[in-house]
Image (tube, rainbow, N blue to C red; front, side, top):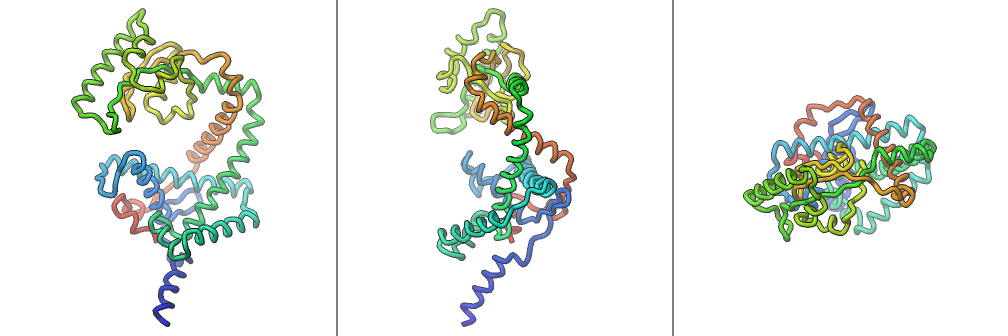
Amino acid sequence: MKKVLIPCLVLCLVLCGCSPSPTAITVGTQKVDLATYAFYIHYNLMNLSTEYGYTSDTLYSDEMTSQIKEDALDQTVTAQIIRLKCEELGLSLDDEELQSLEDDKKEFIESLGGKYAYLDFLRESALTDRSYDAFQEDSLYYDKLYEYLCAEATEYYTDENLRQFFSENYINVKYIRLSIVDENGNTISEIDKAAKLTLANTLLTQALQEGSDFDALIAQYNDDAVMEMNPQGLVVGIAEAQDIPYLSPAFSLEENQIGGVYSGPDGYYIVQRTAVSASYFEENRDMILQNALDWYFSQTLETWKSETTVSTTSAYKKINLDNYMDYVK
């Protein structure tokens, strides 16, 4: 009989979360434990695995480790800011929503094959039961805050304000890309990369000469199919471009000015900023409004984050990419 009760007791203790891990981060009045922070580290590592093929054997540089920890910290802070602001604005989860979360969790556990399979899922995902519940709630709080701010922003974006947003935050770009990735998706040798960079600088010099035909240079040297399919250029919003190293600098260019050489993960870029078609606004008004609402939401969040005190503990400093799973408990 004891052989049956002991595993059941262990399962109960794990699911009840009777031993929360120490505090890692304090955001305003909210305290975040190491287990929660460890999940965000795991999440970022899994993204790197999906995007770049990194494995558990990958050796991360100090710079990469620091960046992953900073990203995890920012994600943690963002989630807590959303909760704090929802509390401040009176945006709470009602009984129906809480019941729905409970029902969804039961269905999810059943779909996995029961509680032991659920525990396996938690371990593989760097989750605890309490953090799983918290993340499900976070999703609803995010939606509530988004709807609240979007209602506020919709009133602000009159036709005049939306047109101003469009003129300030959208550009048209043409570019030459010289790829540093082969047909199998592997980065070419350092010697070949150096040759591509030399060519890119030569092309930039040619493009900047008076009377140069940038379209002709694109036709001759560009190896990006996207640009080939859009010879008139691509309209880009600042929100989508802000994390793209070869597009974000283009917003500082004057109309018809050429800039570069910009390094992207897949190659070297020479970019020209050109005029956006006069008809683009009317043809894409709904999309532009949605982007404006998203921009309003993200900028408001960033403002709140900058105004909120964030501190980390000594325990936070000990967690790294090798030991983070030890803190998932």
